[in-house]
Length: 341
Image 1 (tube, rainbow, N blue to C red):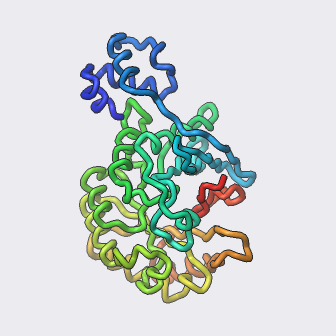
Image 2 (cartoon, rainbow, N blue to C red):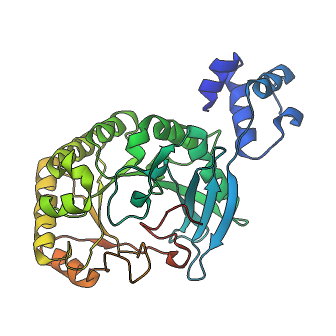
Image 3 (cartoon, rainbow, N blue to C red):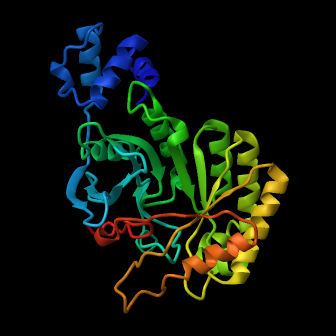
């Protein structure tokens, strides 16, 4: 809850609400015994009477032996399992929190382990925020959560109300104080949600899973394309770019013999060039190597020829970014989150 919402709900002053929210997010618990300068005991008692400070059960903490990735396997009160990942950034001591917005996912993208689960339920606002708080608890002295990426389990824009509320809390100076420009919402392509983000959170960044710029191939990989074809999604992304001035990130995971061909590279370059011509904004193309989502003999896909695909894109005048996707040894890499611990 933001300080403004708390002040209105409890009929206390905004400065008191800010100090109470700050105390909760900085671990000054139990709140009932806290002594907060400038906050009346009546205000603290009202906050305690209003409710409790819930948390998620930490089922396991899995630290990669390959890099500083850490995965938390968490359980909700009603038994749903969700995962959150601590991602190291280039600057030492800084991390991004990769958080889940749903337990499972209904969109069934075939290259994503979460898509195999189906949808359990949407996560509540506090359950999303709590993932960041728990990841923050794994950090050492001098380390901090610099940013948040909604790229864990679930489709964030299918739970847009709670995701937007969570971002408001995360970015509030009295709560987690994370700059909205360091928060990214990743979507498979829900046009209404993309437009809403542009209106309500214009400083928050947008990432879109493209999979392939060839419609027939994208539809094969991402069933959502039947409902929201790529052209419809790109129209919404163009509007987002015009409103916010921010360059969207387009994510592509090359799969061997499926979407890693020269035809795919040419189609993606053509789409990006058209986007820039229409918006004046160049999309940031991120190439994400495929991470196995099953045992080697059962996995339906193999990693595509990433370097060849990148070289083809460069040949078509794009400047793609090859993303490092770590934590694969603890199933924390992109596409691997499946709530299995």
